[in-house]
Image 1 (tube, rainbow, N blue to C red):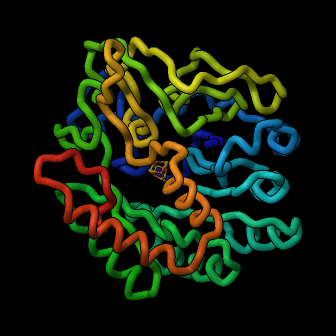
Image 2 (image 1 turned 30 degrees about the vertical axis):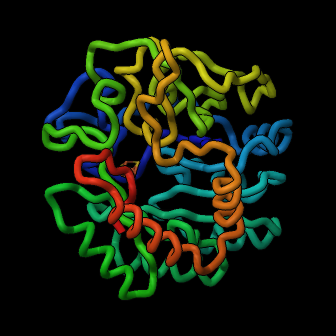
Length: 328
Ligand code: SF4
């Protein structure tokens, strides 16, 4: 479950995929602004009461606090430390907040949370960032599965350079592939599904990430967090719940947002044949259960294991295959 505490962000990265339009191919992301929709926020007390009383916690492997930048919520430290009873809590963040406040809140509440930071080189300061990583690691709050994420922009080497700098400081960093339109080229997912084309078709569609908007509405996938009036399946803070179908039929496949791609699967309506399956779309297979368990345990050797697995996967990919694997 991915709870977007706010869609606001204190950074304005030129490559932010929240700049990608839903309906039109783009040449340059700087043509567009980050989309801040559905940003009506809930208070910390509402989130804490709603998420603590949520009756289906055990249906989820992890609870992710994301955004925008989740730490911009005024009650961020209270929310992440006082929400309890979930298998695993994670924060996906640009790490611009005071990590000592998070460490203190976790100690006070005797709770555990895994921080998965992204390094955004247009805004973040490397020295300050690594200082925060060291504090989080000392407090066992830093993810060992994906310790630092850096976007790889196809025409720039800056991502590689920072990855090396992080490694020299003893932090594993992972380059993830840019998703969507970049300088006129579309990459990562099928263009007829996530490329913002006008034509669209009916497909069977499922998502393994349940998105929750800043107002508490539970929606089907990340695409819906960009839409004001979409179907919702209840509201966390109002304690109103509606059963969520495992698979739905969508008639707007061509308008799904790129940020949903890695979590979703699309199948042909006629024969059920898979059209697209994102890298994070996980069936409850024994292997995936093991992977989820290891990620929750946050074992120290995970980063090295993931790095080796990515190397192997990238080597085995045939040229021309859609490659979603991180560039380790
Ligand atoms: S930090 Fe993340 S959400 Fe904020 S502008 Fe950069 S890419 Fe977008």
